[in-house]
Length: 338
Image 1 (cartoon, helix red, strand yellow):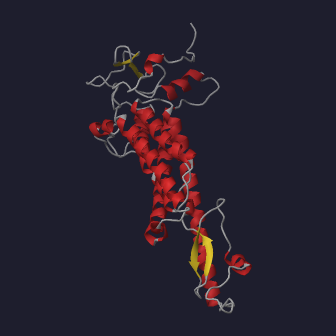
Image 2: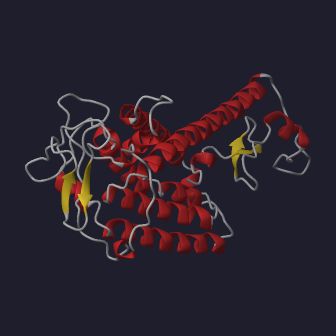
Image 3: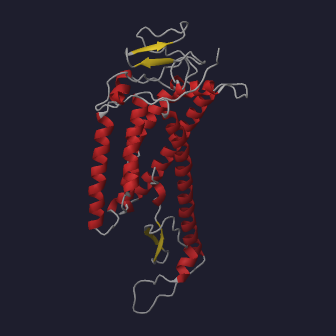
């Protein structure tokens, strides 16, 4: 008798429908007896599925694309002049807090997903068949163990398991107390919130637009596509969605936190340089017949420029003697293309 094997199949074309099938309903994250990283608190099942209605991401993505199209045209008509709000202290503070929030959330999501993967994978050994690893990552409902998974039968529209010792909940869904599979170990909770974060991340684009910059087409469609991909994966509890959550959250946590650190160092360096010039009694010679100082090489050598991107916007930094020196715009890298 041969052991378990791995095989690939192509889903039937009948699966691809629009609007998509209303069943099976997505299963909310189980509520643990203790506050665990896999599911810190419960989520109302009705709310869970209402926000996974296909009309939510489709409508939001469509409105987002249309809005960016018109705002790009608006910025072109103004010759890419920064909006007034982008020069305010409130805006700059918001950009920093926005980045800190996204970095922290992405890091927690990555840690929770990493923990879930570690709990479902079998022990690494040369004697462990590949089928055990495939089963752990591709069958995300039910208790841990090869052949113990609970899957959805799309022909009969019921949840079922091949192991007669595995029991379903009273409503015919996988038992929420089962542990050892990705959905119950954290993917249901953190994946759902990661899906919602894709709507929040459109603020990245608005920050770029507020600075008078153009939102690239790639970034626009990436944000819209991320909403739809995360919706499809979480709505239908698709196993590959764990890779999107795991890798994307890791990249976001590194990218956003690194950019924010660079910006804070740049802002600190500019402030320190201006203070040193002030206390050191540095005075730039005022040209006769002019009310402003020239932007000469000395200023740029002392304060420097941080061209983090080509054609990066710059904002005026007040010199102690009221000379305007061009310095890097604080918070410019707040919006990396995700």
